[in-house]
Image 1 (cartoon, one colour):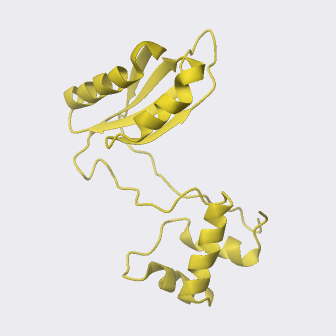
Image 2 (cartoon, rainbow, N blue to C red):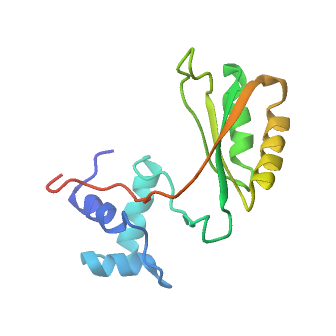
Length: 161
């Protein structure tokens, strides 16, 4: 799908998130001279085409008391990585889960899952739950703990781009 100038304006207007109002799509529409229905229809079309992956809340885990956050990394048999990754990604304490190519011999891991908890002990318990799900398909794993949050932003367009 090729996006037009109006779609691009919608993406630019919502890159920092939707406004926290009872009718966020109407608010975006008022900024751009569009109706609420037009914004909803265009965003739905971009989502259906894969331009927008999802429309979701992105909470600040630290503000919610989830201060022990770790990117768990897993060396999972390739044939089972996708279905097992879907199960891991569906866990309520995993905010994102994805497959990446290995970089052998230094980095054998192909499945990544961000685990959130109030303490490292809690994250370790949750990591053990992931390990049980992966079972014998998992050959090794590790975890990289967050030490601070860097600024998270939506997609940004270069001027004139």
